[in-house]
Image: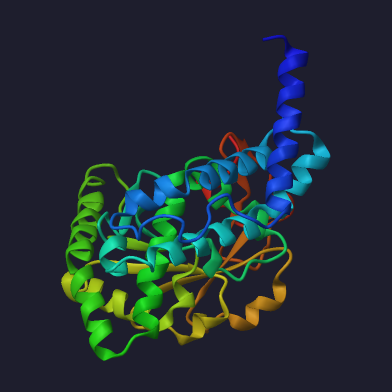
Length: 318
């Protein structure tokens, strides 16, 4: 295909995607099908919307995207993802057993980059001006179908616990036990694989890889307690948060990293005394006051550091 034709097609496609996001509407009509019985049905029902959100994220990150469209796509990412997640959760709630539907696939995830981790809906976040669009939740595989649906369904489980009575909460925790047992085994295995490499750490599970488990503080503490009990205290629960609920978590259950960025210095007041301060260095802007700076990076792009501060090696250029 000639370059000029490809470029014109891409421009029209980006205009369509941005207009779809700007319209604040979804392709899927709520309740238009039978109540779902499996999480895969949710993915199929929302395929068109999941595809367009992924394309919106690609347009916001694309080097070949028209600059004005790229900026607008970037500004629409968080609201579009949150709207899609809420619609997915609402559809799942139509099931005869919403929690069972949500847990028909693994609750926790595992990747080479993040290790064992838990995904929450991005809608659970209190985003800052900078992190709303720049969050790596909108990058590559984190913006793909399965992760978006998994985060929304995990949020359904968390909300069910948070808003439920004692019997509901016991039921949710009982149903999570096989998921947590598997996550604990995987976290221990990860550390055993480091033996002989000269580098080691305590086994841990990361909360949350995307989204904010801290938005559901009772659920978060109950889940951390389950991890502690099932691992005999051998697996740490590490939480990354920007949320005002941070001080509600039990400090005996968590290793807390409270994240600031150049647009949110006032959120330091939300960080409890035991939290480690970390900095999301958007635009490469470092903070010398943070314990560690995570440089902004997106797939193949790592922004160069500006200023002084300790940089996480995994996010450094080169």
